Amino acid sequence: MKSKRCSSLLLAILIVVAAVGALPAAGQIQVTSTDPSAAPQGTTNLNVTISGSGFKKGANAQWFVTGTTNPGGVTVNSTAFNGSNTLTANITIATGAVINGYDVVVTNTDGRTGKGTDKFAVTQQGTPIGCFTTGTPSRATLQATLNPVQPNGAALITTLKLGNAIRVRPLDLNNDAVVDSLVAFVASGSSSGTNPGTYVFFLDPVTGQPQATNPVTGALWQNPLLVLSGVRGTHAAAGDVNGDGIPDFGMTGIDGVAYLFLASVNNASPSYAAYQILPPLGASGWGQSMAFGDVDGLGVDEVVVGASGSGSKRNPGPPGVFIFKYLNGALNYIREIQDPTGVSGTGFGNAIAIGNIDGNPGNELVVGASTASSNGLAYVFAFPATQSNYLTLTGPGPNFGRNLGIADVNLDGFSDLLVLTGRQGDSTAQALLFAGTVHTGSSYTNQLLPAAGLGNGWGMPNIDVGDLNAAGVVAVGAPNAIQGSSCNSIQGGQGALHLFTSPFSTSQTPNYVFETPSLVGSSQFEFGYSVGVVPGYPFIVIGEHFRDVGTTSMAGQVYVYKLN
Image (cartoon, rainbow, N blue to C red; front, side, top):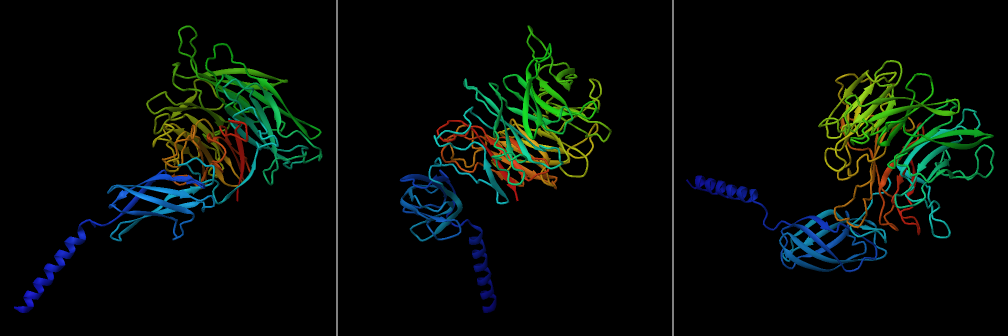
């Protein structure tokens, strides 16, 4: 009997212990966030709201370099109790404080503690409060900035918003089959009554840095080279329109302009002639997009310019793309391909790409029509690009087809089609890869998603695709992205560049995320507004067209990175 009583008592104790264990710990402390979540060296008497649970009156907060017990130069002057879920800590950050992430530890008067890991960051002195940048990925190095501060304190280039658009191609200056320079074509210009400029920079193919002298002759040369003044560009394209092996460039802009920059080399000295591409009769909404590619199979690239059309009664015009060919020293209009529906407002022509994606001889002309249906469409006009011979692709929306790219990014010997879709600032934003040959009913093979919280401005307006030193890449900018929910002082966004490298998963986030190297000295950035991949080389060139440089507000900056 005694044994049974003991057994019953033990069972009751176990049941009580189990029940207590199942209840939430009344004294448990959790630290979930801070606001602001970052502040620079030298900040004094900053009030930081600590959110969590289990706080009691008299609780104290401490800051420690993440993973250590080192306060790192952060002093907590006071901790005020607001309620069980919030505290306010007043902190001072020494000018020599450790730049790093910090753990925040809260201790109640009963000795119970809770820690929020990496909930705060100390940033470089001069960085806006609440803002931080992760900078350059560990497997990349920043090789050069193309708009440095001059001795007078101003930027080298003052045409404003340098980095509106970028394309980069290798250049052989003396026809010996050796690449001598990487030519970076960079557009600039603001809408506020400035004098825009379009430039080419000559970069060392080994280091990515600007070349002070001609690599063939050794003579001093103009670098950068101004190739056009007075015209703002926001989209760039590259190709070879006369078959001479020297890369030519093109530019369109939101001001309704389009230009071809025809390159030539004499005695190892490059130059560029600018040809304005005027809209043919009936074209409305001129210069929405541009692509270079051989659409007639004759071995040289044509220039294709998009026009969004007009629904006005006075001057109606359906959206379309217009094909031009350089011949006998002039750029000649060949023909138009209209939106097959003939309806305005479909987004037809706002994005163009050219390449062989159906497995048959000749290149296809692909035209986005992002508002043609609830999800959007991409029209694939089969070689040789006639009005009536096409198929359509679609996928998750909205805005399927709002940006396009074609390259063999999975390195299987067949060109792949990249389609951007979704709204630029929410969870619908993504890039869809149609690998290999496409046909009616084709579905995407790979879904490329922005890094968490960094998708704002996804693919607006520029992307690039290509072969980056034996790795296929997709580069998508998100210039309005903000790192940290408490960063409110930056105009437009600090921005991010999402780089995906082959092999690609069925669904994935980027392999690399590039952010601006520093938030010091500027209150505006839009890093990733433009991007250029260098085919066959480990370089990627990224534009940050809002950045203040020295005393020049909104001068814009362009960065050259190397993947290691």
